[in-house]
Image (cartoon, rainbow, N blue to C red; front, side, top):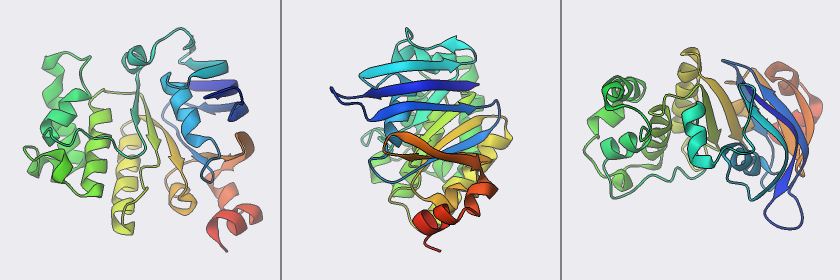
Amino acid sequence: MLSITDLTGGYGPRPVLHGVSLKVAEGETVAILGANTAGKTSIIKAICGLLPKVAGRIELNGRDLARVPAHRRVGLGMACVPEGRHVFPEMTVYENLLLGAYHRRKAALESSLQRCFHLFPRLAERRGQAAGTLSGGEQQMVAVGRALMADPKLLLLDEPSHGLAPMMVDEVHQAIVKVNQEGIAVLLIEQNVASALKVVSRAYVLEGGRIAMEGTARQLETNDEIRRTYLGI
């Protein structure tokens, strides 16, 4: 579904990504793991069309995205949950969710709303509440729900567990599992390696803007270097 080949890019004269190549198959869950400043978010921005300087090739379902502007990529079947959630604080939960479906026909929206409320019952209870008054975990639910309103085939999640209590991290990650069970492919960006490896089938480890390691979740979980560097065991 998603194929990235020799991706190099950044924000100025010096790139932060160096020849990154990775793939996400249809219906697959894949993580990009690594420390802060490794370049993980830059990969997400490149996929979404928001990285200023990009070389290499990004394809979605065989289509080269080089000439597709950011606002058109959502309609091709991808949606992003950005780092930090970025909900619209003065708008209600309901209004935030509707914004995720700006490109869709109104007739299809009710079923998508019910899908979000089934995944996150708390949002149904708070649908008329201003998003800015919600807890961090609830705002993350809004951000995930807003992305799902786009009816994506590929869901990009950038650090969804950042700043959340452990119990809420588990709830968000279980929601990712349920989303994937519906057939949606997931590319997950995470620093929380232990939690991420529980919900993905494969992962790439990014260091200094380069892919340093890749393998199945089980292979990485039992890798001595990963255990020492990221799991502390």
